[in-house]
Image 1 (cartoon, rainbow, N blue to C red):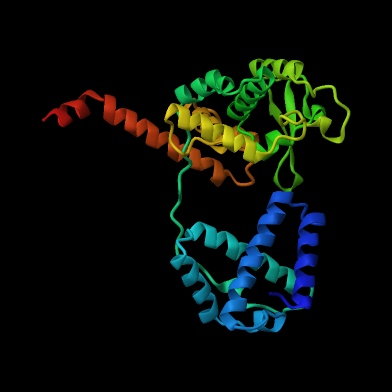
Image 2: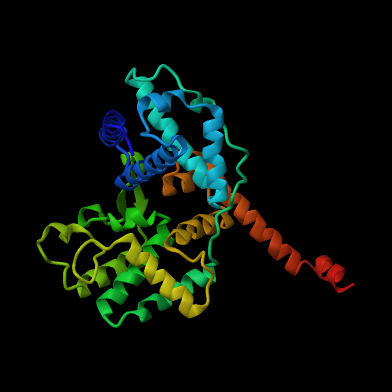
Length: 312
């Protein structure tokens, strides 16, 4: 439980992230949840109301106790690092507002986080998904919607949140306009086959010409509202269960697959960075590691010398 003053500062911080930093709504929600979990732990830890004074006076031992509790709860170090980054952001806001002078949390570091490679699906699996995803729906227009969405995700590498936020105004003759993280705008090429799939879906959709507030969204639910990420996730879950694919077969895996297959095709890293909307090239370079690992696996499976060694 928070004291009223700290609660007010949390609201001011979230407003700052929304209006000044212009973070996306799901990022704001994640920051808010991270703060609430942090405050809940320290309320129990101190056995008293979590106040701004207690926050300012916490020790390294207090913070390590929080980390230890998360480890006992089997939360990943990546999840802990994300929450820590959110709280550090809040502390910087308090310093900016002259509420704190400094805070030892800013110098606190977790252990080394092992780099986790993205897990794409193969190009064959992606194409089979495109061909088969529409078979899960009895309504032809919903099947066409799902096929168009999968084709869009795989061909462009955009995030599922970006795809579901697309409106009819985002469509152009040769590209789509994406409003990504931090309200950054990028133009993503749209190939003819994907454009045709979207047009077929819109022709079949009973909601394509409605005039309610949600009508501008391209991908809609069965009730004519904006399609949710949960709905897209469920559709992929149903598909992978039916076809025996791994749990990593998710809408986001199509983004990984797009990038990895472009790297394997010798596409320029800077171009892939622009396509995906990565702020840092280092994020894009992860897909080089994935491609190299894949090539190494093929080499071990196919090289005559390797086969000879395995036959001994």
